[in-house]
Length: 597
Image (cartoon, rainbow, N blue to C red; front, top):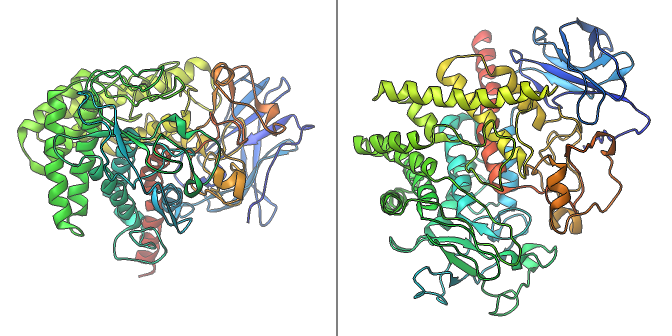
């Protein structure tokens, strides 16, 4: 059942909470915001079932003026841990209901996988039909010798609500799925077959999904000398249709073959615009890390496939070593592409994973070397960045070097690097005086950066036990689930009784009313960026108008592809953190059973 908590334009004061709720030992903070100039001195927590006040709080930090609001306050109820269903009240203003308890995120790790299955190219289990079965014809060969050749590259995932496909984002998504399972295997169940149809197959669904992505990466790397980077270009943007109905003509017939671009160390683009590629390492590092971790985790289920992946990982890694630099995606008729400027993080992660599997000290030495070339992911603490300029948004190579014990000095160094990045974001939030503690730059796909940040917070805490970032970790988790100026979850359909995106930029929803549950939308964006983008508009009255500002906007409107379009890689990246939250439900169940025994 979906209950919509939309805006009353006569209202002047709101209380924002995580609509799912809080673990019992969480740092628990709600945010009060008002169009009026005033302060808060106390608040109450009311039990939804009984209607009684169960907690009175005065641990409050008045934060003053915010974008779109004259006043704000952080309401801290961390010392309240009684499981139940509650609302927070200040004066006559109440929050939406939320829960407290260690089991409230049970099953949450399955939510993003729903969207991933819907994003499948080739056979799509959501539609029970296949799309893009003719892919593809080669273009963009840097040597100019192999263009116009057919390769079977059908499969993988569509990148977002259009139907382009990139190794950059897909390989990262594969790795994120594998990483989430490797850290919290108990959080992921088996309810679907390998093809995405319902029915258990003895393999955790998250590994089935990763295998789907790996199968495509293998097609995109047919031999040790051939690496492709993307399928299709922005000629794809010919109008909203379901993927099975798409009839774009790339020169080989309507709905027929699409172009498959080679990885190129040189600037690439078939039309007016070119990217700024300088090498191959950013893409080949992503291939190698995904292949390596895939080989490790899929070995019990697909031993021959696992052996092939490991050899492909070696080949990709060593070719990346030989070709340092970035391999950016190719633009088409518009100047937009993934402007990735860093590559050493990709090679660092690949080397770290190769070391984890092969235990060859040479890989460890190389991982440390690459890691020292970029100690901190550059977006952390920055005010802005170009589109996907520093990607992936979390450097998991730092985590691997911080958790291994074979080089204690490097371990301490990379723990320090992780802390430095987190501190920069925390400092920026404090400098801004942000009531939500948000130090994330509001660039395109800001929610993806937020997921990267909370992942690094969680990994840092697990490594060190240091509580310095627990408050901002939970604040940014809560931001994604409703504790933000707009009071909406950024995850479509989750929670199912809350305010979540209902009009995302998607043909599934907009044209056919099909839910795209589990998709993480792009998220809030600087108003200046929103106003500068091509072909963007609002198709309906803005229900969040009272919460928009000259600084930042978010719209639940299909016509706003900059804030309300789900992304495949951001959604996949959320599996790690939801795996952690889901695992707490498992721990609560174990504790209850032990107590009963």
